[in-house]
Length: 315
Image 1 (tube, helix red, strand yellow):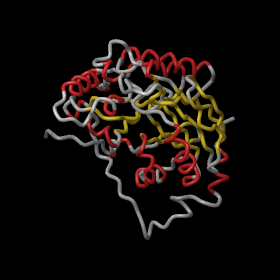
Image 2 (tube, rainbow, N blue to C red; image 1 turned 90 degrees about the vertical axis):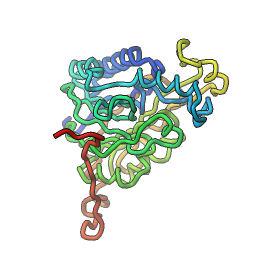
Image 3 (spheres, one colour; image 1 turned 135 degrees about the vertical axis):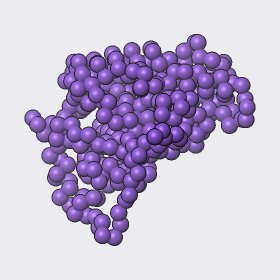
Image 4 (tube, rainbow, N blue to C red; image 1 turned 30 degrees about the vertical axis):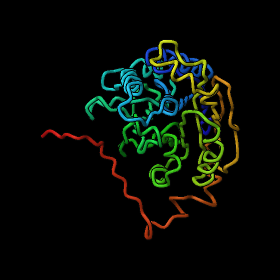
């Protein structure tokens, strides 16, 4: 039984841009997963409090536009400052249920002044302790209008039973060097979080699994036109151009051979459960190991800066 890990993929919609209500939904989901015996539960990118869909719907790149400024301010107010204890109740729920958690949040980082926000992937262990906060290295396309670029501090892995888990946000998963940074630390269960689309997960999930000979869990959120809360600022402007479905999920799992264990799940809200057998990792590493016997560090090596970046340093 030590070889086996019970995982749960939380494919849910946020209570969009409402951090209090979304935290409550996350806590309920953790408790449900715990009751089903899950030892790890994974949530999508920026689930808390939601993805900035308005940028593609309100002429987000327009300079000095009031609608975008006000939505951005609302977004920042509903983002999470970890130092203020805003994840404490989620940590307590993880500890209560003896379940590890990967959670995508918008982080209002105190050490960067507390006004800019970062798409961060938080790992909470089964004791309810926050062990890493990975700020997305490079926001994608229109995300750059509201998110700041992160740093390498969160490129860390964690022991979970026999597994070594690590994770990246969305299109970071296409970046070869951050992937290698995790592989080199022994990662064999890779977590990829997404805002929600099988378009993203259907190819890269299997590719990373085959490249790394690891399990890969991709988790996406959901969002439909009916999920926007009525109190959302400038809701009419958002809905006037919003499609019926903005995020259709696509959460899935690939095995260390690159084949599907759980194919992408579309437009279904809830928890997806699966049992993973660690021995499959050793089996597939027999013929290929990207940072072990099938590597040449005498020829190519990666240097990683894991310092947490800050504008001001006090001596």
